[in-house]
Image 1 (cartoon, rainbow, N blue to C red):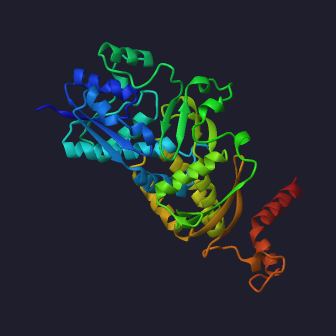
Image 2: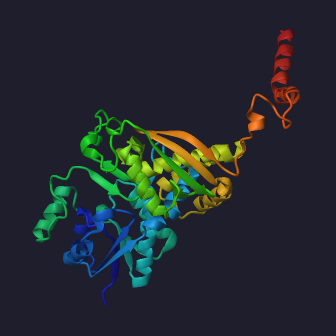
Length: 404
């Protein structure tokens, strides 16, 4: 009986080549698994393509709701933004994909998991760290680190020699990765940092601010314990809510970034990412946090956001530290319940009012007409104590100066 290998299958050029390559070099039965994290129509026809290419079995795992609920929303609650720009769309999808690959591998009693990530990228790390954390006994096969194929042209020639149709045309220009949270673009002019992206041919979800409507769009988001549950008064599932925000944000030119980022493997790479819905949610929950978090909680949450982003980007999702940070953030967000109104206008997200039963804003305290909670006279003693170290240091300097 042949051994089985689980292939992370997208139906793209690389994974189409990998099926016959695995059969020729390992003599394994190849089980193709496509994990649908919101790719849309990209999953159409994949089963037929995989089986016709030589796969013995095909799985399509629809995990869009799980992706948003258990990966995107916790990352949003963390406020995690990699290097100040990237909302981690691809980064947080990979651990979930790997988790599903492991589940199928255990179900099928497979010996190995294979992925099509290159030896230069971050995804190989994200896949493999998750697999090691969940099923350390499984062999991992990474063809790009083994085979002689060096380019798209080589890959297409490999398929042509075996009379296997290529799933792409030679005219395809950008390398893209789509899920429900974002769409990434790499390649072409983006490989030259001195060139501006050609947005008219690049963007697929959003428009440029110049092409956004001349009138603003208002929306209202309702949160419960840091989780968005309603859009404009309508209760929606996590995936449906994000999909609708993507549409609204995209039309208003929201959530497009151009970033030159540091990969885990040490090199820099440039990409343009579209994350309209996620960008809106980050802005909304940020406003609610500023209303409901005390000063120390907000400051510590913002510090932890940097570490959370690093962990997510580097594929360290299934780690004690990431899990602990998420538990801490869940506790913090017990008070982020409320409604946030936003105005979208030509790429901008502008706060337009918010309410929360946990608001720490006290009109009596903040008003120039001070109420009973605050006495101006108390400020003098506070300042004396707060400034005591400064005063002591100044006296010390005076003493030293008088001795010289």
